[in-house]
Image (tube, rainbow over all chains, first blue to last red; front, side, top):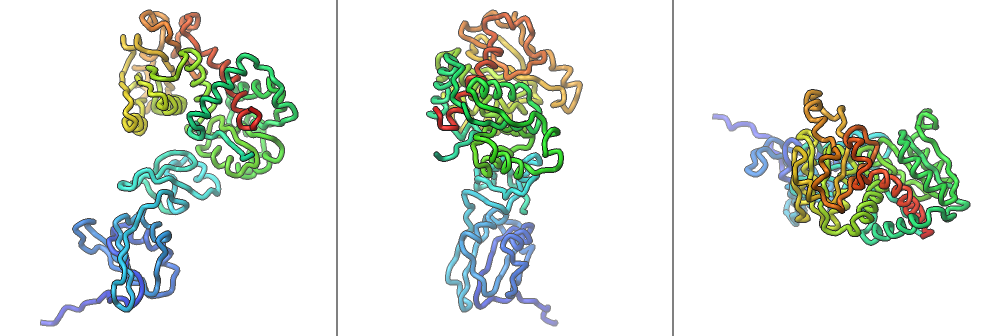
Length: 152
Length: 302
């Protein structure tokens, strides 16, 4: 019997692996981190089995390391994400994503009557709940919760 | 002096609120003081609100200030498509303070961030209307002698009523007990009940007036508006339940006072007006003194 052909999402030599991304938010993570605009090699797998998330995605980005501040921006869509920092094929550091206390930009206020949906105003939120993410708009003071969260 | 605006009641500390209320009492004693002589105040009403505008303009006039502005966006450059950003940046060159009312929520906060002069939010959509809250607090303090440990009844539209939400949040600073009387469809939203739960404050919900009103220190009435109901039959069923009549006030406490942000439609029967417990017109008068005190406080005059 022939060995089944296997496409290996190969290990990277240097860079960042982002694991435990909810499969449905993979492309949001890509968008928030601007991965669609960088020119190093990126591989990702999605709809992988995960006991915790049901279906998860994993992203491997060659030659790129993120600042904490940047990586925490994905906390809204991938709160359980784990990062492995790879140097010379070895995991040299593990990081988790931390939901920041405030969010500027990124999210859209769900209130259709909010000024941020009428004029050019950068959205700003205070994070009022970090478990089931809930954001309080700095402007209209309404709460945008996880289900209604749209990434700009 | 650092520019200070009043957008939301939470912008003021408890100390500041009490300071405003003390100042308000001074203006009540002596309403005509030329403290704004030589100042220009803009009143920008992007949506009409005659009562609020007249109250502010009366306050400014009694202080000797001059007023520029508009009472309706259709009379202004907004109708030509000017953004709020541009209106505020322009008008803040012409005046010492801006009072603004705008239908979009968060507009006043945004304006306060781009304006060179202080902003007073005179209502931003369903969001905040802090001068109303302050005048309510003043009316409560004046009639009850204190803000501590009062039993506040709120009646009518508790779901969409901006004034009741702000007042409830503000009164929670002084350990109030709340009774909410409203139709099922217009109940106090969970987020506000959660807020009280977190503070450990007591509240009770009722669907109609009961003997419990005999416990009230303050009855705060609001309008139940037909357009708030998804089912018009529901409105017809409840519209007369939330009408306060003189006969219902027999067993209420002597210190009890009835407040209403006005305008009233039919939720307080006219037979209540002559009852000494009816306080809503005095409340409106207190609004002028309260606005005098807010203006002077923000301009650093008092």
